[in-house]
Amino acid sequence: MTAAVDTAQTTTIHGDRVSLLRVLGPAHVWALGVGIVLVGEFTGWNFSADKGGALAALIVCWIVGLLYTSVAMIDSEVTSTVAAAGGQYAQAKHIVGPLMAFNVALFLVFAYTMLEVSDAILLGDTIVAKAGVEGLTHNSFIAATIVVLAWLNYRGVLMTLNVNFVITAIAYVSIVILFFSVSPWTQGAVLKLNELVTPGNALPYGWIGVIAAFQFGIWYYLGIEGTTQAAEEVRSPARSLPYGTMAGMITLLIAAAMTWYVCASMMPWEYLGITYYPLWDAGKLSGSPLLENLLFIATLLSALASANGCINDAARAWFSLGRDRYLPSWFSAVHPKYRTPYRSILFLLPIALAFAFIADLNQAITFSILSGVLQYTFMSINIMMFRKKWPLGTIRRGYTHPFHPLPAIVLFCLCMVTFFAIFLGFGSQLIAMTVFYFLISLWFHFYRYKFVRRGDQFSMPWPKPQGY
Amino acid sequence: MWMGLSYICWGISAVLAVWMLYDWFKVDTTYSEDMLTSSREGELEAVSEKHRI
Image (tube, rainbow over the protein chains, first blue to last red):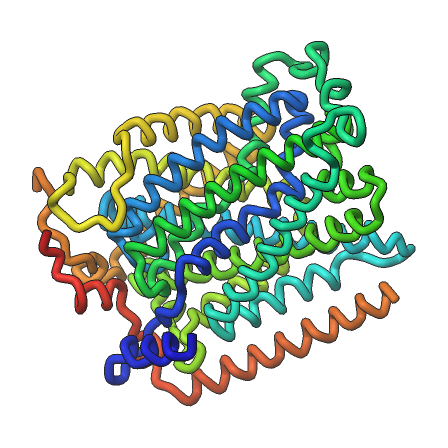
């Protein structure tokens, strides 16, 4: 590992120039993606049971899994070619254009910052719930989560993602331990799926309940696309990014299935749909103090891993905007010793703290999901344009996703269903966010874009696109 | 115990926040702005890959 750091340090400084450090491998990419997402198994996905019942939560687990498999495949192909910090922002800039890129970067920053806020609130609330002490509030735990993780990110990406790998792995293993501890092969002993999910209550609101459940079904996998933000810091982007992202997606599909099976077999859907701690509750219901404490710690670790990855990703998206002068170039500074986008990390720190202290968990989650789905909709259009402008064989791709254009069509259709589901639950927030992005686009087009060095922003040495 | 942990969290947050602000000030006053903002997108790509199929 030391040799890798030395090599990267000698190859990324060019005279007086300083850039991000290329030290990451596929395991770090996995830790970044799964770390951001895994908290969704510990809380979030279960609210889909409130929308449509336990069976609806399982149906959306698989259908939303299809949505995210499409996201992972499309992302892997484009990012293995556009290997730059900013991920989908850099993709949009090269493939669609500056206005789309600006919007995509804002989707990224909002999605990750709001997810970080949600994680910190969850962690604080979980500790307060465990303590059960009069007068204890979650504020100190929220502050410590956000500040300590910002400090970790400030000090370097390698340690940040090494920590994420360890805590994500512990949280994941805890789900596996819970699954095998409740004798999943036997019904009636601990698990009672056939009693809790019956033909009479499986879909209490019918198929419209399944559609409504999409809003929270997103939580099973929300954030896996964050792996692309590491593009400029992995040693071999064309290999590591597709490998880490696809491995992460497989890991999450398994975790989601195990989580649903255990929780739906131990709790009635009316309770499962409203609890904030489905896996921790499953640990309590198992009757084992060891499992209860393990799942409590795993809930905290999953929230930490998610917030850690979110700080990493939001800072890189913000940094990329500054580097292209879409925002003041002041944000594009790289720390000469730690090689991190330190000003972007510090700028986003008080914003996250402010939202965490004043925002409600449901509002923060909804803003995060909305920004994420807007981004996925863009990705379905982006891949169609990418394949049209640079067909296979015209540029080198680290990974080529199969069955094109089927994944893009599936992704687009499922995004439309999810928008409808969000409209059913949080229509006013959906409209408010759409208006916000429209107004900020006007500001960018009529004011900010004149500061952008137009020739410098397109950095990939690609041939001219077809049709131009 | 939990209240004590809460105070420790405030303390750690304050210490690390002050440390980051101090380091930020030190870096910004030690290095030139041109050097700090000299990172360029796709630098390694441009240097190491010619995109020949």
